[in-house]
Picture 1 (cartoon, protein in one colour):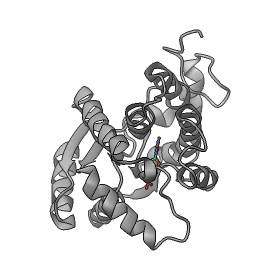
Picture 2 (cartoon, rainbow, N blue to C red):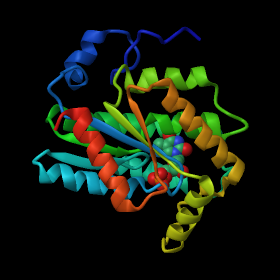
Picture 3 (cartoon, rainbow, N blue to C red):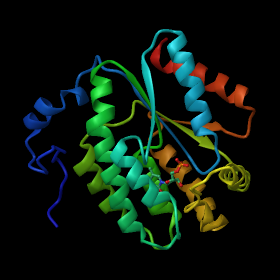
Picture 4 (tube, protein in one colour):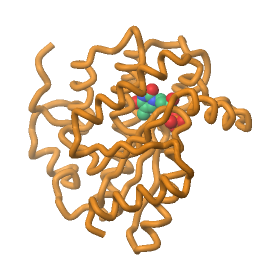
Length: 245
Ligand code: TMP
């Protein structure tokens, strides 16, 4: 396969014409855009609760923002989410999963994230591409080739990256217990990945910490074994410092 390095993602496929992307998605390059903050972590780490609290805080200081998630941040994405997070854990392999997560990501970026950022709205996303590396590469024994994941990133995302990624780190035993408890109240059980067992989730946690170490400017790792309020205070402090609010 020819290398995709240096090529960029455009709606017409990989053609390497940067100008075309600039024309169609100038939002990826404009410095005066909204900020893109992603939250990452294993199951039951409290990402969605913390995103909601941060969103409320940002609104209180007049920063327009939206909360979103992967998979399922768009209407089509919700259909993909249903396929991905429910049912038998072995219904497809890690490569098929990575492709589906990237389809969801591409739709999410082009129809929701990039237009919002261009509009100077901040975007808070519950998961992004680091989840694919953590789950489909570090989590599995039969993992997806790492180079393939990097190439998928280039195809679907180009050279766009989050401005800040907050990794909520937690012992998977605590996280899984929280997650299964939450699922008990759900009509459709979104526990396909939870059912993979402790080894998978321990690999996943280690993987996330490695990813964070490899990009220290983008990542901040926070201890998620704290009260909701304490963790929220840590996040507010971090965001204020990082973006000089
Ligand atoms: P969540 O919304 O509860 O975090 O559920 C999404 C599930 O999908 C979660 O188990 C993590 C998994 N996932 C992947 O395996 N790869 C990905 O790229 C993404 C975005 C999520």
